[in-house]
Length: 105
Image (tube, rainbow, N blue to C red; front, side):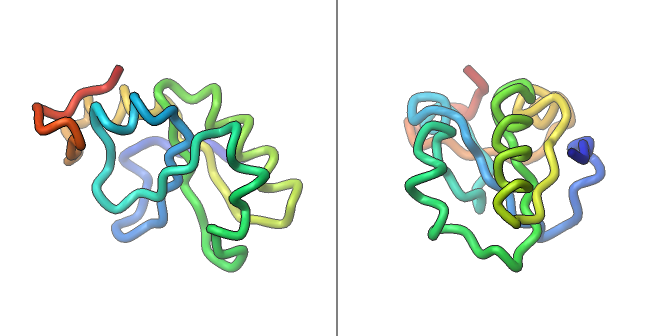
């Protein structure tokens, strides 16, 4: 499994956020695809197997599991080290569905 830092994610990369709904609503990357980890097997068709994915969660644990699972199913995925916490610390842009300042919970 390959790990990448938030700084190493290329512009325009396809980001898969595997956090829970309440985490997503509090703050997420605007053009990320949201599929909670436990829904990934049922929603695999939502992803393009020919597209490279950067998988993110809160700290990197769930995204590591998702990355391993996706790799085993023929997808090209990398794990984002430090997750959304690292994204926030790096000052990367986020949006919130809650109408509040985006944050990581």
